[in-house]
Amino acid sequence: MRVLLIHNPKAGDRKHSKKQLMASLTRCGHQAFYQSIKKRGWKKALKKPVNLVIAAGGDGTVHKTAWRIIDSGIPLAILPLGTANNLARSLGFTGSVDEVLQALRCGNTRPFDVGMARSGSQTEYFLEAAGGGLFADYFPAAKVNETKGASPEEELKAHLTLLRELALDYPARPWKMSIDGKDISGRYILWGAMNIRSAGPALHLAPKAKTDDGRLDFVAVREHERKVFVKHVDAHLAGRKEHVPLTPRKFRELKITSPPGATHLDGEPWPSKKNNDELARGRVEITVKRAALMIWQSRQRHSRDQKKDGL
Image (cartoon, rainbow, N blue to C red; front, side):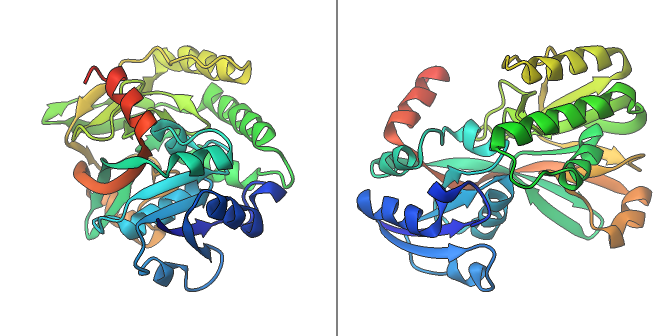
């Protein structure tokens, strides 16, 4: 199989160098081409005639790569080398590098819905989640507080600790919004339009989210749910993977009028600063673009997912 590896050389450790990854691909029988995402021309590399694109890095690398092949029909696979790896975990790309690459030899493509956010003249895609409030302010703070040389486990713990500190007194703001025409306006500490099950520092906020049902999951934390949310973060800090006791609601269209606070798409501030005034005056619409991306999944993993979903 002709494979293009889009790699973030700053992610992972020595075992995840260009030399090691290319050797692993060769051992697994793939004809591989390498491209560092840190080098100029990486976007042009995606025009190569290949059967599969592999994004090797953290969530940021995966997102940048995926956005470039939306609607192309070229399937995407993931080598998770980051901290949270939310998308990789949700899609079953877990295990050692060799295990993930070996599993790709026998697989199938599956459709992956992509979220779309519109505000004025701006339209952007997101893979994991869009949101407002706490998370929108947490993400930039987490980047500022990153520690060089920290292991993924240490980094994740630091991110959870930071989120907990912010959550203790983050203000609940009045958000005027509706989902599928039904008004859900209220004072929220945070809200999210989830495409996958996890968000932020690997928090399981939407356990029943699916990436191929044409819908997103709306989750939110109000003032009276603050302690419940903090307790959920504490559980993750203690190593317990628990689902947050919130009630997600599936939807196809979310509308927000004059957002009172920060918003994000996949952890990045949105919209761009030059359009912040336009956002404040106007409306945000969040919808779903069905099957916009194709994911390459091992047959074994695909079979497990079908059983879990009752198919």
